[in-house]
Image 1 (cartoon, one colour):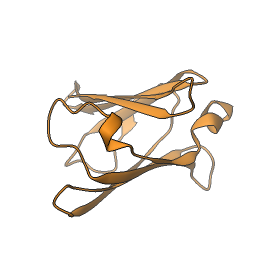
Image 2 (cartoon, helix red, strand yellow; image 1 turned 90 degrees about the vertical axis):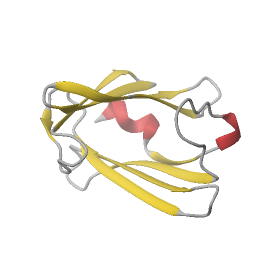
Image 3 (tube, helix red, strand yellow; image 1 turned 60 degrees about the vertical axis):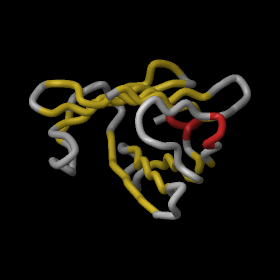
Length: 120
């Protein structure tokens, strides 16, 4: 999975640089992208702390092959689809009942930061 190489890292959140149109910004956070042991899936992990010092974590697996596949947490979504646009960006869609409920764009900026844009 050569396309994933640039993304495989732990990325620190800079909350003051983000734009939060819904919800409140977190106090801190780490976003980690790694290959699973079989090297066919990406593991996306997120850990963050709210301004009220509450800690949260979330993670999911995805095969970025452009095909819709079942999602491991049906409370969030039924299926997921992810694809690499190029070597510096990939997009993931979460579906419920054949409707897109979340779109996540991961993009590495020219300065080497990971920019994440979520559309609900």
